[in-house]
Image 1: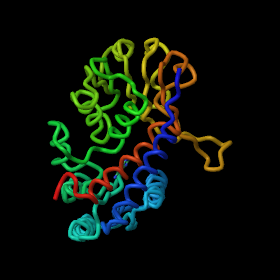
Image 2: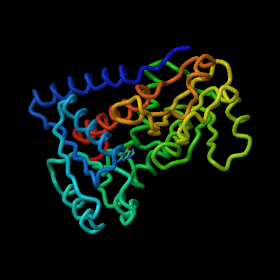
Image 3: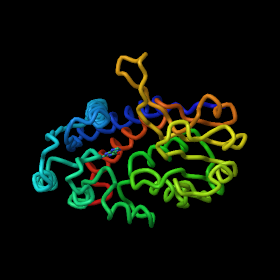
Image 4: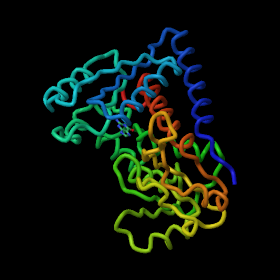
Length: 292
Ligand code: GUN
C-alpha cells in the first residue's frame, strides 16, 4: 500500500507556481490577483478561505478578502460580484459556499463572469468541461486528477466508481474520469439511492468517495489492489483536540488501507490539492490562457 501525500504534491506545485509568477513579474507581467468573498462565520468556510489567502502568499499572488455578515441581501452580494467582474486588477474570484439560506446560490454563481470563475462553477465552465474544451475546472476534481497523474496511476480503461453526485465534486469528477484526455476510465456514479452499492464498489479499480458520510467505504467494499481516493472532510467531535473536532474521511481507513495499492489520507490527501488547483486556475486566469 502506498500513501498518496497530497500535502507534499501541493507544496511542490505551489513552488512551481511561485517560480512562474516570479518569472512573469521579472519580465514586466502582471501579478495574479485572487479575490475571495466570505459571507458569515461558518467555521469550515473561515478555515478554507484563510488557507486560500495563505496559499496566495505562498504562490506570490495578490489576494483580497471581502467579508460580509450573514444578513447581507442577495442584491448586495450580486452588486459585489458585479464590481469584481468589472475590476480589471482582479484576475479571478470565488464566493465561498455555502451561502445563507435566503441567498440563491445559483443566481450568485451565474452572475460571476465565467472568465474570472476560477472555481469552475459557472454553467459555461461546467458545459465546456463536459465536452473537453479549455475552461476552469472545479478545484477538487482537478486536484484529484493531478494526484493520479503525479503518482503515475494508470486510469485508462479502468473501472472507476464515484460515490456522490454533487455539482462541486461528484459530477465533475465523473466527467473528468470519463474523458479521454483525463481519466479515460469506465465510470459509474453511485449516490444515496443506488442499489447494490457494495457490489458495485467491489468491482472498482478506482474508488473516489465524495459522499460526506464518515467511514462509509468499508473493507468489504474494496477490491484487493484498488486505488481509493477519499474526498470526505466531515467534522466529528473530538474532545482530545484543541479545536474540539477532527476531520473524518468517507473511508474506513484503518480497515481499508491494507487492501489498497494507493490510498489518500484525511487530512493531507485531497484537501491540500483543492487549494493548489485553485491557485493553478488563478495563474491561468492571470495569464488569460483560456479566455481573453
Ligand atoms: N465550499 C466548499 N468547497 C468550495 C469550493 O471549492 N469553492 C467555493 N467557492 N466554496 C466551496
